[in-house]
Image 1 (cartoon, rainbow, N blue to C red):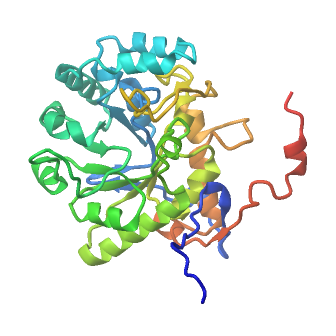
Image 2: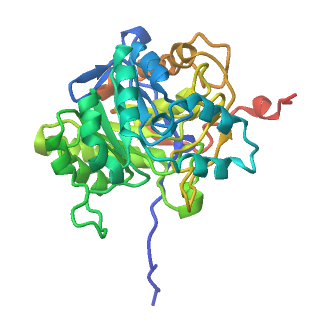
Image 3: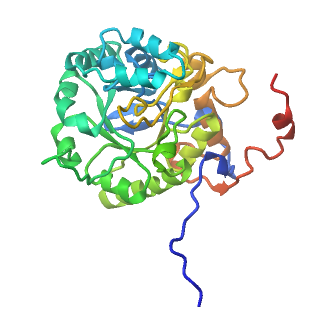
Length: 381
């Protein structure tokens, strides 16, 4: 008798294990449309700067908005705990490696101040930008009125893992159906990685879904907790949930792949896998004027008892404009992300993002190294 397997595992794929197949028809890149919408807000480029203290501050959010994108401000970071956050950011950037996590735990232990939430939101709005802000589920009910009254345009409720049903000792926790009815602005929720969790969240009425658990460069959730799904598989599963939900409800909820991006090719693969937009941290932390001063860290890094992130040095490689639109002299794909996406869509014959979702993808674990002998053996000094 053949002994049955206790469990069967399916293979899940990350960016380096797949490739996009060019189309039979090609289009000039400048004729492609990469815009998308969240609620009533239309964005010309499908790229979002993540809600991390080393990436987004009010000034960065204004710059990103003027370039056609969106940046999300973390309302549980140094911007809402300190009158002079730049001084705190400089201390974090200059701290020795052995001391930085303890420093951040102490730094982030200071209380969040509602008057600073209002001030930061008003600063973004005064710059003429679409204002998106992020809070964790535990703080959403506490701060949501302040957020809406201050004039925020989009509310992002994000945690390492978000689900529709959450069991706790609270008599009445955060209920997304109630939240979306309570506020007049779009609510984006995350993060999730599975079909069932995604379609369940969409049924609550939220306006967007963040996809990705632990893939970010500064995140250590996969090492600490062992959880996550590689981003291509997670995106495809959640995109299927979006499409099925649309058939049921006739309401389209954009899927935003969040984390793990290192180059333009990763952005292209996420979009072809079904994403409507992508959320990026470490590449934007490399921009001139980013608040992290060449460093990047995750929101879970300063957790008081179980840090799930680390400060990484990313350096400063160019302007925000170069990272998004070029021109660039870098050959590894970390700049001109929009140009890379438009070129990829052009060779796939996709005029817009919805058509790009139909592009064929193949399993290709050698795609990064195939034929690259001289690049891989070239001296680095």
